[in-house]
Image 1 (cartoon, rainbow, N blue to C red):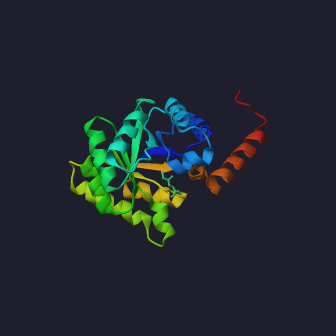
Image 2: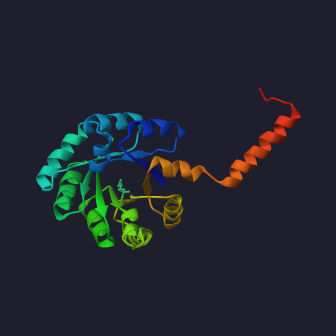
Image 3: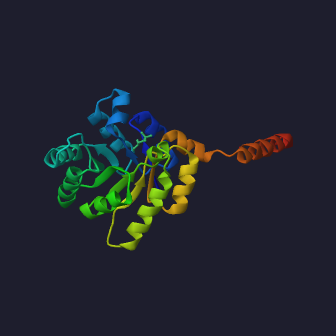
Length: 218
Ligand code: G3P
């Protein structure tokens, strides 16, 4: 599974890249707005920190405008991935951009029908939002399972499932069991994945016993 950080805060990415766990970054207009920073500067900084795809979302709503914005965003860095919404115009733009050689992440996916269309349009990634489905009493993980089954039925489809709107470590555990290709997660969730009380208590015990020996390794 590839791990992308879901953030527009450059420092969050800078803090985690040296773990070797960060394969890419996803942003969206709301994440950018929250930082108050310039979008182009943010995307450029992210692209310099990671080798993998950095998703930058268009804000036009018609296909030609999405295409034009996407091509412009791609001039920021070679690892920019154009993010477009899963609308009919977004699918048109996905087809145009992918035909022109630009990678596309189709976002705001909430059904397996939508995900199938995104794949047929040529998306590199489709982003099903699992947390937002949970928020309305549905099961976002079921959507990932459905999309996994649909995509596996048709090996010619090359689109990767990029699970998004991830809220906790249970989401991450289940996504790995289902077989999502990518998870884009907040830095806090990545850090939470590391934690286990038995690891902490076990390390405390090791260090206390070692200290009692009076020895030092260096
Ligand atoms: O990448 C999409 C993600 O940022 C949406 O998360 O928590 O706003 O549903 P959330």
